[in-house]
Length: 194
Image (cartoon, one colour):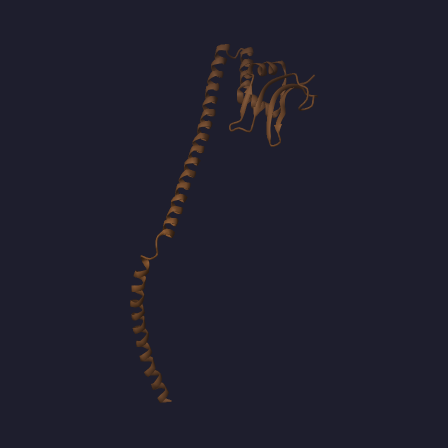
């Protein structure tokens, strides 16, 4: 019997949720399984992985083969690295204490990277929220200015414009009359010459 560590799909359409199970390779994807060892939710950012580390390591040591996606999950959680270190201890490359120290160092670095990603996502979300609030405040100020301009009485502006209009008209009339008088004699001279 070939044993696989694989995913069992649950959840509704468009929102998958997976159980990490150990199953016979001949069983259907969502069918009979031997043992459930965790869950995987890709809908969150970063993805939520809940895995029984010891059971997963035990099944790998017994010879269960993970699928590609499950291999990535096990690698992310450090199960494959722990198995690799145990192989080094069996071969005599280093002792158990060194293997545990290497694993703890790797685990702390991994947690720091995950926390950095979470902090970056939270900071980006906060910056987007502040930008949205600033844009909303600017739009509100523009609307208030437009309403204020609309509600100001036009009576104050009307007398000023009426006084300016006659002065401009008088200057325009004198400017229009002068060229017209100059053109008229020129036209008369040209008529008399003919």
